[in-house]
Each structure stands twice: as C-alpha cells, then as structure tokens.
Amino acid sequence: MNIEMMREFFGWITLINLGLFTFTAIMSAGCRGLIYKVHGNMFGLSEETTNKALYYFLAFYKIVFITFNLIPWIALTIMT
Image (cartoon, rainbow, N blue to C red):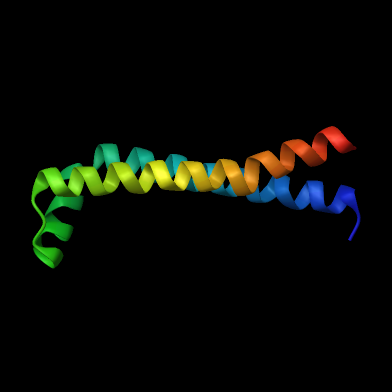
C-alpha cells in the first residue's frame, strides 16, 4: 500500500464520516421529540439528560472524526 492509496482511502473515509456526522446532526436537530420519546421510554431518561447525552455523543464523534480521519488525510495530502 503506497502513500497515494492511503491518501485516497483516508479521503473517502473522511467524506463518508463527514456525511454521517452531518446527517446525525441534522436528524438530531429535526427529530428531537422522537429521539426523546424513544430513549426516554427505553432508558427512563429525562429530556434534559437526553439532550446532554446527544450533545456529548456529537462532540465525541467530531473529536474522533477529526483525530482519526481528517488529520491523517491532511497529513498525507501534504506529503504527496
């Protein structure tokens, strides 16, 4: 596996994860009532706790996305 192939791999994985993150953020903003209803019934969470958990999930996903997808792609792009 050469650097060009790795750069292309990280480019695609970055694009896919960015799309998934964007979809999740839009759905969580648009379907907040449904998310609360499902998770509130399943786990007995309050609306405030559900909102905090969703916020923490999106923040963690963004940090992991940047650290393991975007930064390696940028580094490989600079190298080639």
